[in-house]
Length: 289
Ligand code: FAD
Image (cartoon, rainbow, N blue to C red; front, side):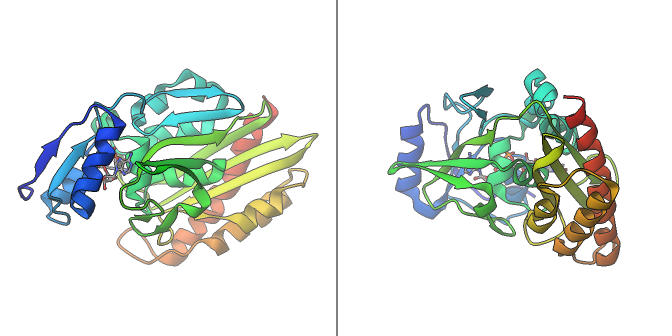
């Protein structure tokens, strides 16, 4: 199907983006990689009056670590994240999750910012960012605010971004030497959205778990932070019993629906198995750091 008619603007500065968003109110949509928006237009689930293409706006891409933070520009493509040597060396959860997203074409165009802003409960990056304890930078003509990722996802395809706001950057606390993470995803076929996805991050401190983060994909109305499971890990010496308990609590936090991908009970079992497996992988990486 063809999309409905729309105007198109490709501004060269953030100020121009904000002015277009203000001018058109709810009738304007930002266009990043177009990998979610264009299919929605073609299916006529959205019919904005104007697309504001942000691909020419400088300063929105890049991945760098400085002053105790990892910064990922909103326009960083999934493929760049997967290929980054910095992420492979210091943030294995991010590098590990990228190849699980879609197919090579979608990974080349789709962006981190677009994926988070789209707030699809089956989006993989949301869970990764919950596990990492990230924050999102939202800018508007009136200024900038920092939104903890735990407050960002409000429901299926609903985020904390206000009209006129744009996600410009994602910030992740800098990795410590003794940290590790893993992303595990069950999909029906290569390139599919998750039946279940699990993101796990562990940070060791003097032989015990300092901080843990667990994010769950496609098992609820939004990406879920398994906070009770992560809380049960913090301060403990890693052991099979501690990991089993965290996996049980994470499965309890999941709120899956039965659908063509599997029953709710099956998905909950996958969460439990994946969290246990992910914790073991993350521990191995943290111990080798
Ligand atoms: P766009 O499609 O350009 O925009 C998406 C939405 O976000 C729009 O509403 C847009 O207005 C808004 N937006 C974009 N950028 C910003 C910004 N900076 N600030 C505020 N709002 C913004 N995703 C997965 O996670 N896992 C998968 O397995 C997966 N499989 C896929 C398979 C296929 C075949 C396709 C087509 C997509 C798949 N996706 C998957 C989605 C893909 O990751 C998209 O790239 C992503 O969801 C959207 O990013 P985008 O840059 O393309 O955003």
